[in-house]
Length: 118
Image 1 (cartoon, rainbow, N blue to C red):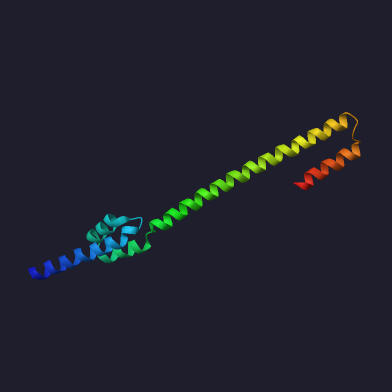
Image 2: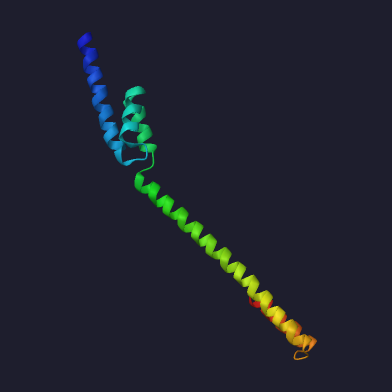
C-alpha cells in the first residue's frame, strides 16, 4: 500500500514538472504551472496552462495596443489641426470681406467651400 502511494506521488510530481515545462513560455510561467499541478492536480494545471496566453501573444497584444493608442493620438492631433486651419481660413475670409475685397456672396461661397472640403 505504501509503495503504491510513493509510486503515485512520484508520477504526480513528474507530470507536474512536465506541466511546468509546458507552461514555461506562457504567462503563467514554469513555477505557476508546476505549483497549480502539485496543489490541485496535473490535469487541472494542464488545462489552465492550455488556456493561458503565451508570452509572444501577450507581447503582440501590447504592441497592438500601443499602436492603436498612437494612431488615436495622431488622428486627434490631425483633427484639431484641421479645425484650427478651417477657423483660420474663415477669419481670413472675414478680414477680406471687411476690407471690401470680397462680396457677401463670394464670402458665403468660399466659406461653404472650406466647410464642405473638410
